[in-house]
Amino acid sequence: MTTRPYVILSAAISVDGYLDDTSPDRLLLSNEPDFDRVDQVRAESDAILIGANTMRRDNPRLLVNSEERRTRRIADGKPEYPLKVTVTASGDLSADLKFWHHGGQKLVLTVDSAEEKVRATLGDFADVVSVGPELDWGLVLDELGRRGVERLMVEGGGTIHTQLMAQNLADEVHLAIAPLLVGQPEAARFLGAADYPGGSTARMKVLEVRAIGDVVFVRYAPKERSTEN
Image 1 (cartoon, one colour):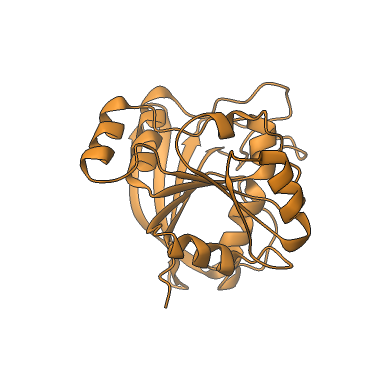
Image 2 (cartoon, rainbow, N blue to C red):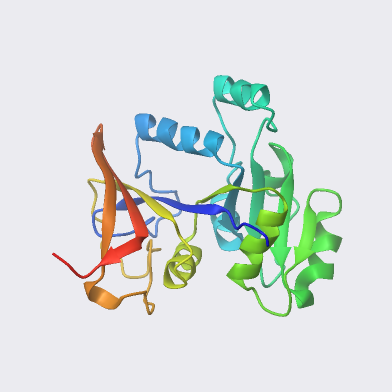
């Protein structure tokens, strides 16, 4: 039986739960010490996953930036960079995005109807795998488990975070809470409306809370829910 990865959802959010505002420029919610923390979590991961919408909007390279951490990965018998993964149901991906041109191996998980489109667009930039007629997160995690991914870091966007939380597939949630208020209903949020396990009274276990400069970092165990105050 395939062992699914340990799934970590990672996000920087405003106090009112937003991932960004609606301006053309990316809203910087985190700070340099917290960026370094994120870099450490990436270095400890076997794979990093983002959705196609996040890739198109932010155009990230999604790398381990610290040379020391990359060297340590190699010394531990791992690739210099974690596997970079994206998921898409539409197949609307551009080969010009930075994601494909930096770091190590890349993987696209898609659906049957978009598989050929993705292959035609990306050529040799990435391995392309369909998980079936629909994007099934259980099958996505099974595929990653078959590839030896034991620790998966998910960096967005909000739709993916919402789906994984609603399906009780997240093992940890890492939130960097910035002292900002966005207040724009049309801006992207960390989580959307969903039927979450346990309902509105189920309390997640807090694993860690600490200040990192002006950001508060909180680590939750969402599968360890209780209804006790």
